[in-house]
Length: 578
Image (tube, rainbow, N blue to C red; front, side, top):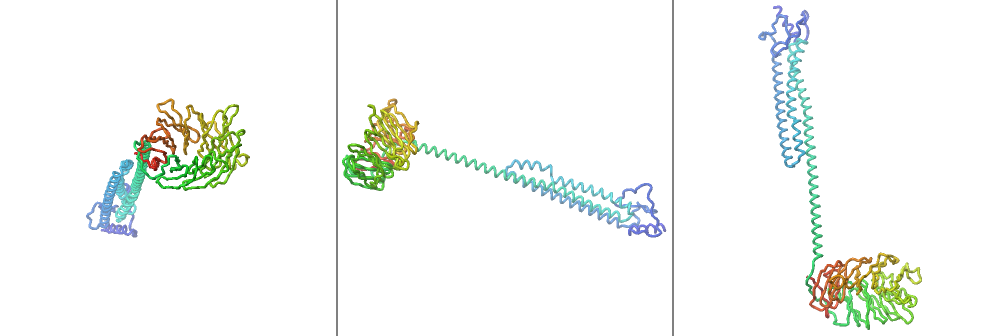
């Protein structure tokens, strides 16, 4: 009975953690530590009491209740962890399904490879391993802590306290491992996001490249189609011409015609009239002349009477002025600004005077046969600043030609006779002079073509062309000059060689038709007689070869084929080619 009371007292002391006086301490067990306690056994032995007797009604029951609570808490935690693991697995599967759908839509191979690599770092597997580790770790720590608490404290509440601490430690350990597992899942998510962003950027870049390639292809095709259409349009030919009457003219058999900027000028002994391409009369000037001569430069025409004393200067707007000379007129040369160079003769010398359109004298030259020869041709630059004069003389029973250039601007003011350059040729005559622009003049003889250019009109050795055939005529235009000769090598009778403003041959036209006149306009050559007409390009390709229903007296080319005018008996007609 006394022993039982002592056991009770020792138990109460263990519960309170305070030793009672008069009670002896338990000696350490020489056999070693006690066996590992279980959930229903006591964590220590009391002398005189059987530790395996669990049916003693006096044994405390608090430790059993606490152990049950610990087991319940541990099961609850395991259930919660299992539920979380299932939710994580479900979320991961949903995310993978969404990724798979997006990747199917995009068709990106890079994202597919990213999905193949993800299973190696599967967050679900990591969570399962973490859960297993947490459970094992929790159980192992629980056993170790219970045994240590039982041996050190000898208390009835040691088992419950150990189990609670173990449960808490297990939960903390599981949370830490979950946190360690979460960065892996977060890294996978970041990789997937980066892969998705890279895939989206690659898709945009591929789309831009495809659009750029399509644009380039479309532009190239459009250019090819446009160039082909232009070439076909330029190479098209015409077989029929339709004449449309636009204006009436006086029926004067002695009248002549000139092209004034694409407009028709009819002039004769009693006056001149100008009609535009729509049939409107631009101006009508009356005069009295016995032998009218003309000079045209651009949109300016000068009409004078050979042997007379009056010159009339007009442009497309009307009469610019009248010039009266003191000596009989031999020839004239007009400039685009309205200035006119007049060659006049008297019994002892030849006078060359330069006038404005209003009749004011700008400069004059006096030439004698003994010193300078006799002038046969003259030309004035479009700005009226330079005069080219071709003169012939006899030297040792040979014909000598002198080509001189006179500048009435700042360059010629330093010289007494205004002459800035000249060239002499033996046994050669240059009766044709033509200014292509303000600094380029072409001179044609029966054997060659000379080209002079630059500010001081210096001759270049490479600026001439030799003629091997007989020259039949020279025809000037705004861009080219044509030299007509007989064709001795081909089937055609004539060859018209075309030269640019630098004296280089640009093309040739071969034809057989008997012609009355040849006109150059732009890059086209117009050849006609009274009934027939042929139109060529400078390369020799025939655009039209046909006949007209009316007799043609003059042909007036314009800027294009649609601006072609012809003068028939008493009217002006517009030509429509078909």
